[in-house]
Length: 353
Image (tube, rainbow, N blue to C red; front, side):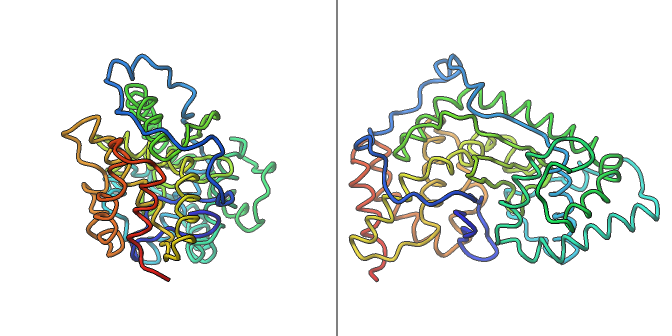
């Protein structure tokens, strides 16, 4: 999402989010983007220093927040996690011991607060901008005294924190640490050069500032989301989509949200010029298509995330636009068309106002 706008394809299929920061209104002033080149081979990728691109973190407060949010959603009967977000979470993250009666009551009070105040506003900015980023930045002590959180939220977190720290956090932190080790290895092998290729395909260059990547056991019902002010990625360490073969694509996709400004701006300007209706989620579909296509270019046997987990088939909007992107956007990725011509072609396939 940009701002508090959710990127939906079709309820209840929420894709990875992108929240915070203004939507750009102009393409970069550096001239027309150069055609993205094929990703270098594995050896060339491995030889490049990727240590400063992504900064991996396992944050106590953010994990607590997401654990309470998960339990609150389940208490409301919301078990609509997307295919890529599923995994053996109950088995992998079982409590180290049973809760006492007092602990169970206190935990339930915090979950009830989340059910009333967070889950009910999950498409607004409270979940991500006002809560997620602030908790990720909070000092890892026991006070939350340095963070400008709503008083009721702080009280719920502080009441639940000792329970979470003793019962679940050691398990969750171990899962996060193991996932971070795997993610670093995946990104070190190919991530830098494929990240550069992705940024070029989106008409820009990779950000000079490291992007923070938080590992949490639960990261929304889609398994990952991104905020923009500052760039911040949150990814589930247990979701099936963020592990195994699709791990690198998820990392690139989420970081790609930070680099969508040129595509967003170009689509908006061209839609206004052609008087076409621009779907709010189109640039996100461009990102799905591009990351999948570039990963498959690097590995012809690779099955992209959107195909593996049914993104293209579970939404009418996605089905309608997949063919359009294959016809009009793919030639840009292949170096057979300019960025501007590809944008023009994509927009020309949209409905008129």
